[in-house]
Every structure is written in structure tokens, then in C-alpha cells.
Length: 95
Image 1 (cartoon, rainbow, N blue to C red):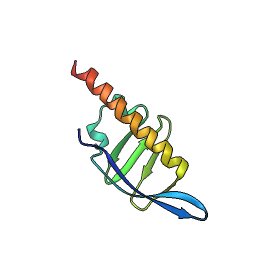
Image 2: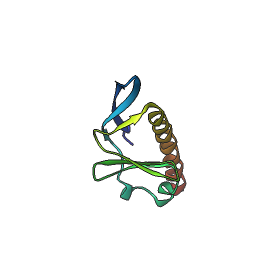
Image 3: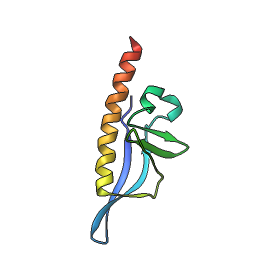
């Protein structure tokens, strides 16, 4: 599996840091992912939009969107957890 790449630029705005979302690469479409994966914390692509969920709420990022530093940290943590979950699900499905 190719590395997931999320492109952000860190910007200073009104004394606080934000992250400007520029795009993504190697993110699978939600239609290509197992339903089990989509039922919990996950991330996926859909029509050029980056979607991510904490398992309860669904969020989206389009190029040009800004997120706070706290939301950026949460997103990066969710992406790492999502990659691990997908590996586990795929390994179970191969057996």
C-alpha cells in the first residue's frame, strides 16, 4: 500500500497556528474500503474531498480549508489509528 499523503501548510493567523489543507494522495475511495472499517474511526476519499470520522462524527476537508492546531493533531492521530485498523481488518479478511 502506498503511503497516505496529506498536504498542509502551517500558517499563523491572529496569533494562533492553523493548518491550510492543500490536498491528499493515495487515499482510498470510501467505496473501496470494507464496511467494517467505515463503521469506526476512519478516513477515506470521496469526489476529491478528504473525509474522516472519529467513529461518531463525520468531517470533511476540501483544498483551501483551514483547521486549528488541535484539530490537526486529532486528525493525524486518527489517520495513524485508521491505518492500523485497516491493516488489521485486511489481515483478518485474508485468512
